[in-house]
Length: 134
Image (cartoon, rainbow, N blue to C red; front, side):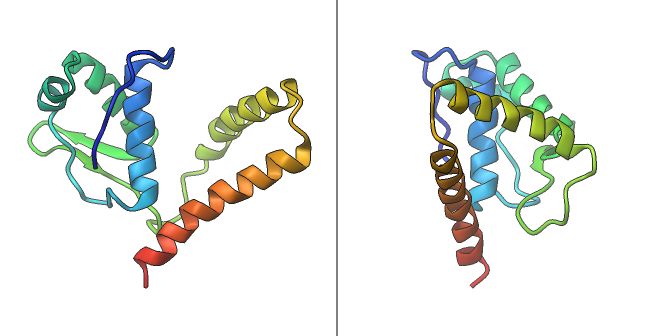
């Protein structure tokens, strides 16, 4: 997994890191039990403060995707096929989804186009998961 940051975007660096790690988990590049680099090492590799990396890791921990231990560091806690999400996952996820959908509606994207693009993205993620199991 290669992480990159874009300093020319308004998306905070910790959010960019979080999003890339989530995508890597969904794509099977990171699997349950895999270790991530130490915050200081990743910060040095990317040229960012290790507190920024720590913020991304902590966000992923709160979301249930990482386990953080002083001795073992950051370890992927969940991935495709690791069972259903906890019940508290859905309300927050639906809130974020609602904002994305509202952006599309506000920009005049037709509902059929929204659904088509959502289905295509979901298909691309599940295709990766299916390839991993064959």
